[in-house]
Amino acid sequence: QVQLVESGGGLVQPGGSLRLSCAGTRMIFGIYDMGWYRQAPGKQRELVAGITRGRRTNYADSVNGRFTVSRDNAKNTVYLQMDSLKPEDTGVYYCNANWTEMNFAYWGQGTQVTVSS
Image (tube, rainbow, N blue to C red):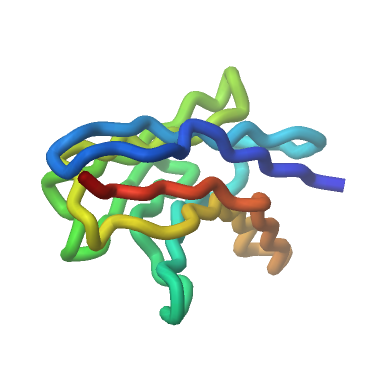
C-alpha cells in the first residue's frame, strides 16, 4: 500500500518561511503527479501547488510568487517551500499523489501550518 508522510509543519510568524516535505513509500514515485493541498478550518480542501511527473508546476493565485514546489524522485520526496507566509496560509497541508492513467490517488495524513504572531 502506498504511503505518503508529510513533515515540516509548525507555527511561524507572518513573513516567515517553512519547508514541507512529503515522502512516498511503496510506490514508483516518478510516475505520479504530485500536489499540495490545504484545508483551513470551516473551508474546503484546495489545491495550493502541483508538479507533474514531467516537472511542470502550477500554483493557486493566492500563493503564486511565494511558494515553490519541487520534487526529488531519487528520494521519493516532494517539497513545498513557503515564503512570506500570511495568516491566511494557516491550515492542514496534505500531500497528494495521482497516477492519472490508472486513476490511482493517494493522500498523506496532513501537517498543520499555523501563521500567527
